[in-house]
Amino acid sequence: MIEEKVSIFGKMLNIFKDNIKNIKDERRQRSDLKYSYADIILGAFSMLYFQNPSWLSYQKKMQGINGQSNATTIFGIKVPSENHSKKLLDKLSPKVFKKVYDDILLECERLNIISQFIFMKKYLLVAVDGVQYHSSQKIKCKCCQTKKDRKTGIITYSHVAITPTIVHPKLKKVIALFQEFITNEDGADKQDCEVNATKRWLDTFDILKFLKKKYKIIILGDDLYSRYPMIQKILDKGHSFILVCKTTSHKALYKTVEAYKQTKSVKTFTTTRIHNGKKQILTYNWINEILLNGNTKDNIEVNWCELRIVNSDGKQLHCFSFVTDLKITKNSIEEIIEAGRTRWKIENENNNTLKTKGYDLAHNYGHGDEYLSQNICSLNILAFLFHTVQEFEDKNYIEVRAIVGTRREFFQTLNMLTTMFAMRNFDKMLEFIIIQRTDGMKVDDVGDYIVGRCFLEL
Ligand SMILES: [Zn+2]
Image 1 (cartoon, protein in one colour):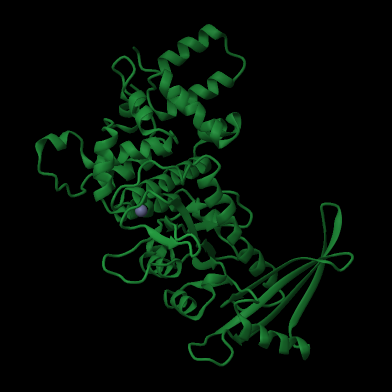
Image 2 (cartoon, helix red, strand yellow; image 1 turned 90 degrees about the vertical axis):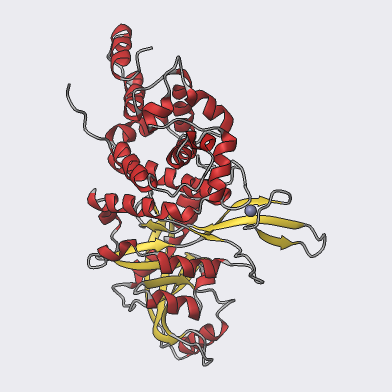
C-alpha cells in the first residue's frame, strides 16, 4: 500500500491532539470516563470546524452512517453527548489551548507562512482588539461582565475576548493568535476591562520569542491603547507600537502639535492619487519626539503623525492620526501610516469574519457557569486558524474554496456531505468536491473513482 502524505489538516490535528492528550482528568466516576477529555474537546472543535449551528444535529449526523462515523474518520474521535460535553468544557480553563495555538504558529513559521507577513523589512504587525462574543439580559455566568442601564435599570451580561492577529496591509488573510478573556476574578470589586486584559495578554505573548532575532513586533491598537501605561508596557516587552491617537482624547499632545503648526515646524509631505476616477491630495504631517501628556507626570516621548486626505475642492475626506516609537522620516511615513491603518483589518477580516461571514462567534452554543463560553470562543477561533492555514497551504482546499464561493456556502457543502456520506477523511472530502465540479469525467467513472477513493465502503 502506498503511504499517503500527511496533509496540512492532518498535521494540525496531530499538533492539537498531542497537546490535549495529557489534560489532567479529575473525574472519579467510571461512568464518566467513556469519553476522554480529548474526545470532548475535539468533538466541540469538529462541530465548530464545520460551523454546524446545532450541537444536537451535528452529534447525530457524525454518529454514523450505516455504522461508519465521520467523526472517527475525519477527527479520530467518538462524539460525546451535548450535555456531557458542556459539563466538562465548563470546568476546563481555556488556557490549555494556548500551546495548541503556539505550536500551530510554529508550524506556520516552518511552512514560510509567517514570513509572508513581514512588513518594513523585519516587522510583524500584531493588531489587538476586543470582540464581544456574548450579550444577553438573561443568560449569565460568574465570568460575565455586567452593565446596568441608567434609565431602565436593566442589566446586560456580556463576554469580550482580546483577539490579537498578525496582519499585513497587502494580505486579506490574518493569523489568529491565542486570545485573552476579559473576565471577573472572584472577589474583585472592580470589573476587568479591555486594557487590563490586553496587558495580561502582553505578559503571556511569548511565542514569537524564538523568532525575535528574525522579526520585530509592532503592536497596532485603537485610541484606547495610546496611553502612558499601555505604551510603557509594550516597550517593556520589547515591542514597538503604532496606536491611533485622537484629538478628543489627547488634548495636551494636540496643543503641542498646534504650537508646532503655528511655527511651521511640523514636517510635511504631500502627494496626489487618483481614487475611483477622482483626484485626491494626501498630506502627511509628523513630529518626532514630543510628549504624550503635555507636562504631567507619567509622561513619555512619542512620535506623532497624521494623514489628511482631501478631494480636489479641498474638502477633507479622511484624517488618520497615530503615535509610534518608530522614527518618522519622509521615507518611512507612508509605510507607518499604512501599518497603522491595517489595524482596521482586525475588525474587517478577523472580527467580522468571525461574527458574520461564516464563523458564528456570537452564536450561543451554551454559556455554562464558568468556562464553557470562553472555551467555545477559543475553539471557534482555533477552527478559523485551521481554515486560514489550509487556505495558505492546502492545494485542494484552495481549489475547493475557489469553486464553492462564499465561506457560508463552503460550510454548507461540507455539512451536506457529512450528512449524506461517510468520508474516508477530510482530504478525500475536498477531493470529492473537486471531482464533482470538474468536467471531463464520465458519470460512471466518477462514481467508481469516488467510491474507491473518497467514501468508506458501506
Ligand atoms: Zn457569562
